Image (tube, rainbow, N blue to C red; front, side, top):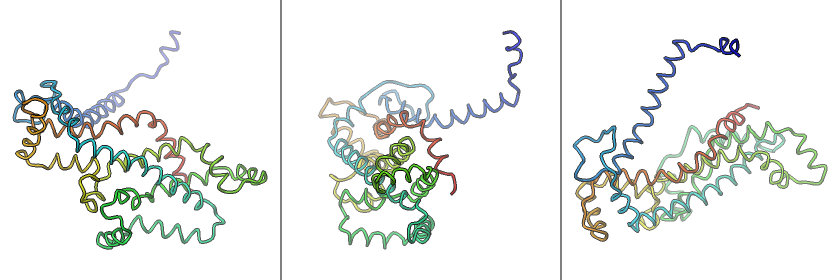
Length: 298
């Protein structure tokens, strides 16, 4: 036992330096979120002129009460949930189907399609042609504009295709001998054995749909159809006087209390991040494996 302990690798000065550097980088990465969190609990009467804090100044939940008491917040939250759920399902269906088809070397026009798909990663027609296409499709001021145009991420499609290329062809050949067609093979063989890999990209799409704001900003004019990120944007860019007015209006419905404006802004950011943060821990273990496997070339 003593001999085994003496044979353990000693921590060198290099290792210590690496740990210190990584620790500092971790603190730098984590601090902005920590700062946002403690400001969201700040009381109006204890805040200072600085917006950088190391220790919580107070634990006041007034900002959160105002947010959760705002009907616009819940409407925007519902829109974002709808866009995320439907958008992920739509994106995964067309991405998996497209990637599986493109992984077949005997597919007619496969190389041409791959070339055209890759071109979209580097070139686009610009905002005005894009707007005209969306308008002609009748998607202006339609919730579907946050789902359909961004249905496929080209990078994800290519990684999925490369992953499907790594699956042994013998699995499909044996299934075809039993009378299965391509759709049956995809649904009953390929997808089940690729569940961790699929979960990774489902989360990637979920993050994109949850953070959707660009298409909503351009095409959505009805506030009832605006997602949570647009609500957050309005809270963050609204002038202090207008935001204070909103806070006081909401506060009067509950109790006549002052609310610190940055506290309301930071609380909105925290609330917007929570849903995705709750999902990440359950799927994080699949990230490295899924990306590395999908990155293997043909």
